[in-house]
Image 1 (cartoon, rainbow, N blue to C red):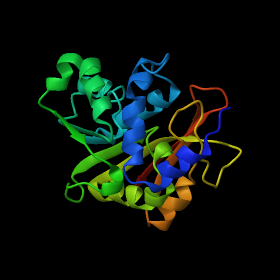
Image 2: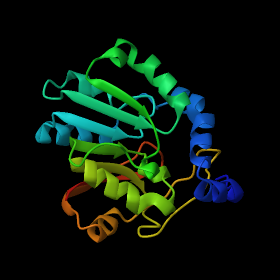
Image 3: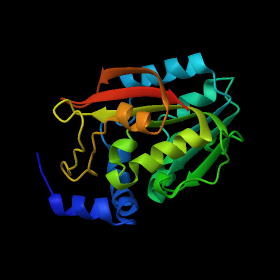
Amino acid sequence: MDYDIQPQIEYEKAVGEVEKVWNMSAADFYHALGRREYYAEHDVLYTWIDEIKPTSVYQVGIGFGRELKPLFSKPYIKKIVGMDISEEMLKYLKEWLGNLSEDPRLELLHGNICDGTTFKDASFDLAFTLGCLTHVPRRCMPFALQELLRIAKRVINIELFWEHVPHQNFKLFIHGNPPGFSYDYPNLYSQLGAIIERTTRVAGEGAGEAYYIIQVRK
């Protein structure tokens, strides 16, 4: 693996560095082999969503909209809001979604979960992330989770989890990609007073990767 420690340090400390990194990575991310496919973690996500049947959904870290696209076919969903830190990624989202990007149920936001949101408490039936919190710096993780709990009645997080660092922060650049962090989500949510409703794990799309999936509520 290619380790690059100095950019990771800046990514961790500098407020604007996260957005800068994702704007630079947007094109490669969108065109990378396999990014447009759906995997086992998506099956879990949509199965749980079908069981919850939320009328309103909020996704943090929408990327180019891969996870949002199937939501438009679910008749019980009346409102879809997606936020991403990268303006460049949002441009690719409009290409990926095509006419769906004009759907009146959809609202797109450019923002950083570390800065919070302007939504009122319990504005959404469900908030979720997939491979987003994995790249959120340690300094703002408790706040990010608290904000998700605040604006949504339920939260689902599907995030990378490395077995060899189960309860510590794992941060590095791998081949130029943004750094990844392996967090102990059950412990973090318990500290915030959240109720853990269910969890599971599935194999990730890369060798040696696994996704930890957790559903919580206040």
